[in-house]
Length: 65
Image (cartoon, rainbow, N blue to C red; front, side):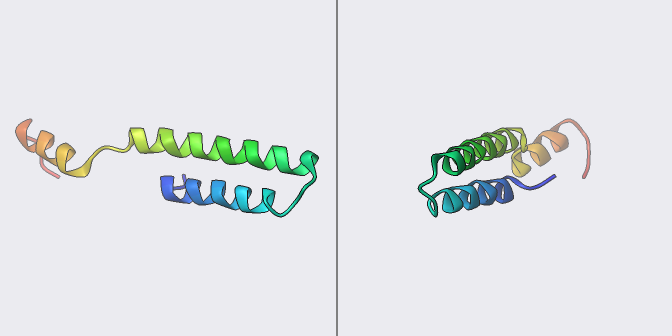
């Protein structure tokens, strides 16, 4: 799976391509795709554990690693 940063880059690429055309039949799907990539990136970011807190929680619960 791509990282959230890679997903955001996909969205930016779609926006850049959309900016290169005035044709709504091309532009609108690219902008929708950009919104979709950003949503996937947002979900990915929310599901990513905060490393320091995960490690602290593991130590508190007696787990190592």
